[in-house]
Image (cartoon, rainbow, N blue to C red):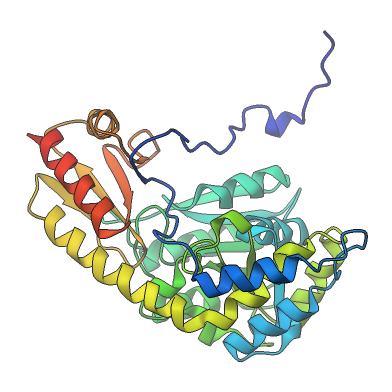
Length: 357
């Protein structure tokens, strides 16, 4: 069989992998532990029943952008929406990176930042996080000064480590990227609502900064694949030139527009998850593992007496699935657990205690 060769720079690229197996307790992909409220699901069912299926969706997602803008107190022209935050990231990189351009990440971090950047043909430069996975401003300064990246990624809270970047650090990164040839700073806040501050307060027309968010985590809508960003109007206008027409279907636009009407329910879920996270962390700290601080809906820990892979397999044998990060660069023997319901978390903690014996 004759096969057409892929681009040389993509031949060694690996796809995104996350095991999907049937288990009693699934805590591996940072999904919300509960579904959206019943009132939302009922309203959504009624709304989609009236979709004009033979018509294209609103190309500009006008109602959805307006609803998100009202949620954050910004102009709708500062909102860009797409099929999950990954498509948001992809559109950013299609617009501002590519062949001959450089993208900076600080590892370990969300692997799709580098993955998508490489797929656009950009050169990815990787800065290093400290032993505790925090960002060292000296290292950030070195990377930006040496490589002058066209796009710099921050992930706060950082996936998979859970750390939150301080306001001073983000301001410093913005200052380093300023000048006659400024670079774009992207703060990925997929888990932003779980943290105690947001870079949204730094977004302005004069600042080359965007903050990306998702409906998958706090809004309990992973099945919908809906994400957005808040950024300067001029930047959103550039993204609108690049994104495919009619890319966001009508059903998804309805889901997002309705969801933000249930902000109170979302905020209550966040409070519940944060409290549960602290309970889980307190128990994890009594075990023979190293636990890293988290401002997200997950916790990263490193095993000591047994390998991370062995512990992961032991949990899977007990029908508990978490994320095995132990084979990833810089994350030897590290595992990541999503915060679930109290019952799910108890099952995980019991199983982990057994496996570590």
